[in-house]
Length: 317
Image 1 (cartoon, rainbow, N blue to C red):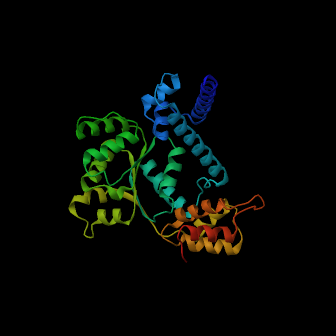
Image 2: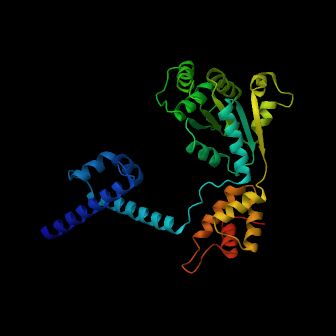
Image 3: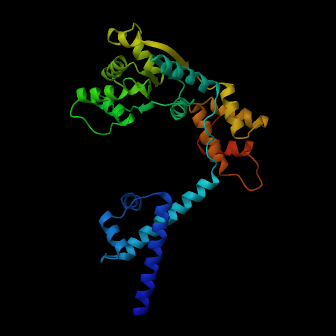
């Protein structure tokens, strides 16, 4: 019996060492580990300290499953090619031009349409390469002035909640004025009228560059057909408009070059995939899935890899 207890203790100690090593590699706290492994945080802490008197084997089993899942995830990640970093496609260059104008002129730019053609990716790339650029991504939950302003406050580094929308607006204005910066509002189609007006007011108060990005509906809402009166102040301030359509041949060719896909048949298939609703985003997902099918003898994705991945994703041409 004593020998059995010693063996169990040794197994538990080895597991603790392996888990700690993995936590250090991933930069995980015990709180995060508790969430990922499904183990109560207090129980986990007691287990690590050797003070847990409950079912230690159940904890060990859960952590072993967690370690196995991490290992499998890493193996899949190593096999799956990462999407190439941002590339200056013709569409991306058009988006960048709008962002640059708004930034330098302290004006409002509107970029709309073209789902899956790289609006968000280009905005993040611009942010990474320019000072004082903030990206606030809206969602259907942004249904009030307070919610819109809170999302902007978080994006510009003001995490502390204010007791009212007025105080939040004051804090945002104080942070942004005289920065010569650019606020990019992504998924702006989710903003209500009051939210759009609140953001316009921040722009007016600070002289900050403002870029509104979203789908076709953001433009139709602002123009309102007859340019509704409650949008007049915003519409009159838009100094640069970019309407995005489907990906161009140049967009697709730039992406395929990054994936080292130059064979004619493969390129033609990718062109057709990019014309579907997912556009470049959908094509990238196909290529990433196809990369899982590569063997050691494959130098790059082939037509068969791409076709199989597209079929696996439910595509039909």
